[in-house]
Image (cartoon, rainbow, N blue to C red; front, side, top):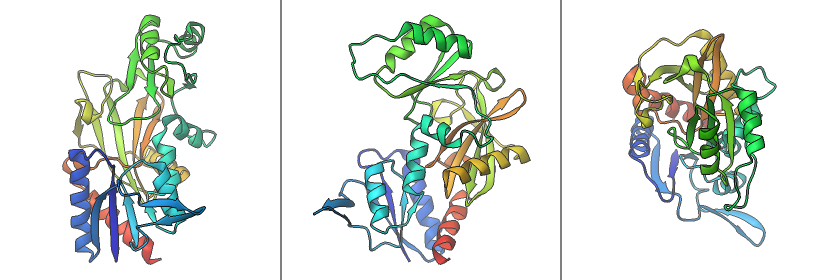
Length: 291
């Protein structure tokens, strides 16, 4: 069996490099040969109206990029992707994630979609921002729909801060969300593989409302509550994910789903939980292909 691990064309973060090395290590133990490549060689393309792929010779592709065009084309050319193209695309856009999970009994913070703006010279709509503040109450969380590691996420304590944040994200798809005070500086990251919650860690920060490790937070070992496992598994199932990291907030009446990450880093999780995440993911991929 041969597999391709495909990463972003331009950026290879240390976390991604480590992810690739760990997956190659675990695949090798299963007798699977893998090759790591950057997504810069037009792995799929259109020719005379037909989709062609340069990676059809691989049995699978572990897709650690978020390029939706290549992923969809490669999949339509017959390449088995982990995760699937539609699942990666849905998770890459936070608003699309929320819409996919909506009306399925998934508790989430109250969320308002940001207005779409094409004119960088425009100014934020003050009346709409006033409405957002009144509906959500301050502080208000404002997020870029795209981004990871806590980037593009702001906390507006008042109307002036909300206007400034909205100005920064004016021409970027974004959303407004109610703040969960019980979860300030902490959340629960749950890893789900093959539909089953495998492990978790509590992420904490004493200097930021965001708990992301990349934003300065730390991970702490903790047990996985049954309700958290069930919520994370349901979200993964609805999004059709083979692998993901589900971020849960600590609400006053239970857990709330914050985000779902299709390419969640697992370095910190393995160190904190002691669980071999790479092994579990590699085994899931091999077993899925054997069916």
